[in-house]
Amino acid sequence: MEILQPCVENKSEKEAVVALKDIVRAKMLISPTIHQTPLNHSKTFSKMTDNEVYLKLENLQKTGAFKIRGATNKIYNLSPEEAQNGVIAASAGNHAQGVALAATSRNIKSVIVMPKHAPSAKIMATRGYGAEVVLHGQNYDEAYQHALNLQWEKGYTFVHAFDDSEVIAGQGTISLEILDQMPDVNMIIVPIGGGGLISGMAIAAKEINPKIKIVGVQASGAASMYLSRHNNKVSQLPGVKTIADGIAVRQPGHMTFNYVQKYADDIVTVEEDEIADTILTLLERGKFMAEGAGVVGLAALLNEKIYVRGAKVAVLISGGNIDALRISEIIREMR
Image (cartoon, rainbow, N blue to C red):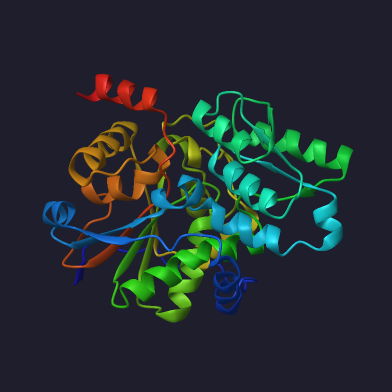
């Protein structure tokens, strides 16, 4: 395997709070209630990139996205008092559904604050899983602030979308599955929003095999972790605008930033047209439906933002919750 793009050195020396044992424990806890998703070899994308490309299909997960893993681990670890208070979360959609389903399975009240312009399919699904949905704000960060206010007023237990050790541990179970399915994987490519997913996956993969390259991908219109990494401190964007609504986060977590600095080898960004084209390419050539946030890793590989040859590459397709109307709009715009 030849890695042609240099990796960024880790800069943080802060010790991680989440350890491999926590991720293994999370896998044991949540495995009875989630799917072990397929790791599918793609001849098409392998030929297009001169690698052996495998797609980790979390778009086939319960609720249509990986978020159910972290939400379930968090909610199943709540104390009786925390559970009795009910839970609240802020989400653009996928974390919302994960929290709603996990809470309902434990007969816990859940309130989810979602941005006013969250995809209607995600809003309807969240309500369908049993949550009370509150629409507030123009983006995740405004919804998050309102959720904090409601938590203070009502005494709910907060389930953070990414900056929480139990949520991070739950997301890390994806790497455990990948390594069970393909022990000789060379590189794992992971979407980044607030950083919980890449944090958990990087901890698990690197603690098992430090030689595995972990590369994160953000939309250029919401590249808060990319900016933070280059500033060597948590940094906030003035705004975000991207088709990848699931990773449209203005500021990453403080906890997740430290994990990314310690474990991730690199972060790259992709443009809006590259994301849109990859949604259609994956649908047409791979026969899988995925949302914008779900395909940024594949977009980076196909557009040589991650330039690697001869590698066994696992690309996480993190979610499939996209409106049919949005797909038709993309088709009109791109084709």
